[in-house]
Image (cartoon, rainbow, N blue to C red; front, side, top):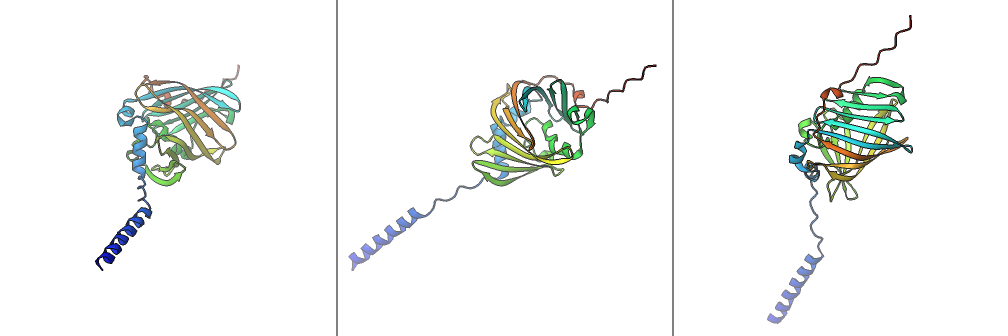
Length: 253
């Protein structure tokens, strides 16, 4: 009888071990939105490097419908963002500051500086900050939410205090932003805009930025290739203020 009981005990232990082996491994815990954003900030250089960058001057080439247009982007942290593109002799300007935005687009019939619609300003004003809208987002009154995954990328929705929404795809390995999706107004129509980012490189301060951007505006697409980046160049904040419209020439006497 002792032998039989012993064999039964061995069989029971063997079955328990087998069941344990067949049990699925505990699922890895999903990081929170805050944790993902924190890893992204570290991936682009960390707070120490980002805080050293007070201004950025970026020279790039914008390709639109087979034409290359030189572009200069100027950012002073927390003060303003200005993008100027020379398209076949026509200068297109888009500018944000901490109080409002304005633009010049002769191709859309706006040859003089024109105030930017409020919803367009709210959607894009996060560009005035070095580090992007996810950097120090809570202090700016924004909130983040994890919307699941798209392949290996985490989908993080950022909602600003004005309720402007942007969804970022953050790579689950590098924690760099690979795409951003939002809405904008074009000719009084709401359009979905998707921007894909790649070719990240470090600036002299250790802050990392993408050198290639592909922008899908629905009706047309454009690509931006960065050529040169200057960090902490002295920039007059006045460049972000909307200039007065040119006066019409006086009739000849």
